[in-house]
Length: 477
View 1 (cartoon, rainbow, N blue to C red):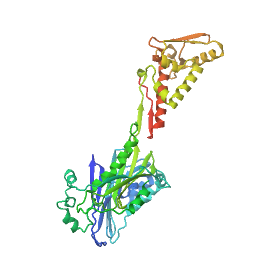
View 2 (spheres, rainbow, N blue to C red):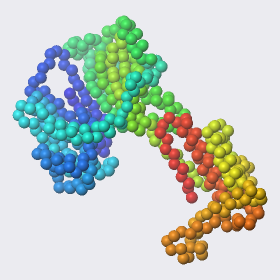
View 3 (tube, helix red, strand yellow):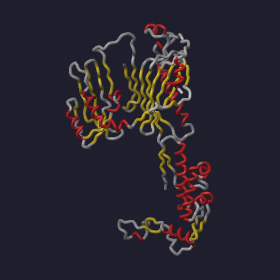
View 4 (tube, rainbow, N blue to C red):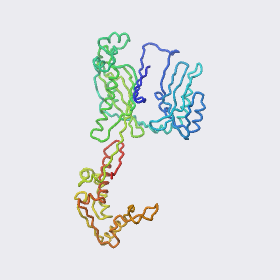
């Protein structure tokens, strides 16, 4: 088994683990061993929140060598992700640094772990200790994932069909993988030497990217017998992997076509399960099997060959990209703004009609009329019971006195409230709003008009966007 990591800014972005299978009998010997990091084998123990008592126990362990950094908080999140575990025949060794997480990207080294099992023992005391601590939050973490009881549902109406390449020389030259078993010129001898059953699409390896009606067909394929090509070269394993990933990407890209939300593939992992013959048909199906906290879809990927044999099995996590809708302020006001959506969207029309009814009843004007016609003058009459109620609504409108006002000279730290429209008094019989550019551009009417335009747009989008939508109404002044 061989592992390769691709890093960017000291952070691993791609891990490739290749397993080379040897034909014949195998048995455990003293030379067998595996070397892996904790984040590869036990993801749930990479970061653990410890309380003060648990930290004291850690510091007392013989295999923990603390640094000079002291931890003062009652709860501290520690990272054990970089621990390297070497497991062999009757032996175990764990080494690596332990970090305290100070933020999303910041961490501080608080010590190192140096553990070696006793003679003739492969017991891993470090992992056993971390498992006990991690179990404290197991119940909470278990709710972060949910798998459907019925097994989920298939995303493709029919499996994606493709024919594997009949020759691999072009791919070998482009990828730089010049392994002779992929070449027609040299493949025959190597395939025969390895006693392989003809041409093969893959080497056995496991790859993980960390970053956004199949069963009937499967049964049918199992009873389908076709002629197996006789080429004796192997198609690159990455071709099969890329094909499965491409099916996933194209499906979700089609789902978001024309929509403001976009998907993000957070994780995609695949493991090869069987041999693929060049020139044979492959069928790939996607299955939505569960959900993860944050609206993340868990999707299973399977590829079978024309004989119905499973050749690739994978899992992917698809998360929606969070969107922030920022709306401009008063300078963006325009006659008839929001009216196109008013005519085409039921929810937008309900927002405007409800607000128009409320403003007409309480303040005596139609916001729809102002947005559509932008009158330069509006006169309100306060006669009768309805007029008196409207006048009282205006009198009740108050604001904090401006800094230059005499009202605030002796107020101390307390803000004094003054009438928003002081010209309207208890004895006023009428009042006129006037603005040379039209009332829509007067602040008293611009602000509610903009708020309604933005609210109607947000609610309309929330009905058609399947992603998690975070709307922020931001008035720029």
